[in-house]
Image (cartoon, helix red, strand yellow):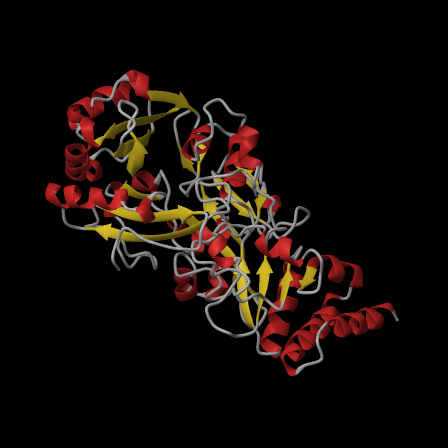
Length: 469
């Protein structure tokens, strides 16, 4: 009796208009396939549920996609294991609803939890799938759909630990660090970045010049396709396995889990940062960096963050370029290397800090040096882009930009709309030169000197980029 009563109550909570019919049908279908009515009530959120809004906005970092006019899902499903996802996929397909998949993190354009089109859709949020197992002996990660069961046979391997597609990158790094100080995974940074979306979207991080993208280090995956089948690399075929490693999250199915190859790093890495304003020759340094950064040894990741600041000397507005980087080695090795390759930068030991690779990820997200490693577990850790209106887009640079072009760019930062604007240059080269552009759906390999990320942040809805496009 209870499941039937639950279905009736859910149906009554929705409007009886024609627009509500798909939601009623979906909920009815899902409740029948969940079997357990208490699980259904805890894991499925509708627009009339008091927790619906907080769940929807839980990983939405850009306020552009939380306005009253933003299309919202008919329901949010937060599965605990594969059968829940299979049920949601089946019911969406049966009743003609689109699926948005969110792996517990954020995305720049809100594609994982909203839509640009007025079509009914459901969000499947994998945030509950968050356990990890690390096999230190074979340097691999084995991912599961629950803490109790692992897809890959644990009996065949020693020290196997499981991890799921809903894991955040920093949660993953914390679990690796617990087992080894000299193993890492070459993915991105940020407490609000979900592992599933990062891998399937072709995201890169500070180790990509040495080891390639995270997607380049995927060994296997478990995916639920549109028919509800659970497929691995062998059963899904080479084409589909190629597509999910950079071709877009949720485009070809829902990835439950990833099997990843870990990479070796020194027990201590060196993080450095050095900021220069226009008055301190920043323009020339940025221009010269272009010639050098992509040719540096693979062990060095460098970037430049360019933004508007007030000069500490005269409190006048100026533009600042912050040269940052991570080196897989010691300070004593790094300083003479930079002095040889880029002497104009003027780096000294005082600009450098040694720490573990896991700790360097905290530094990269602007956490104070020395903060507890457990901070990696805090998904709510604030960043520059946390809970603001922001817009971001990227370019890939293949030809050197003349110094005069940079001089013409700086005045853009003084405009009112650019108060919270920034540009981030990230050096390519290294391993990225060695991987074919057809190896995965991420084609930006050989020939790219660096990428430029344009970011605008603020508290208002007005969006203005530094570029005219």
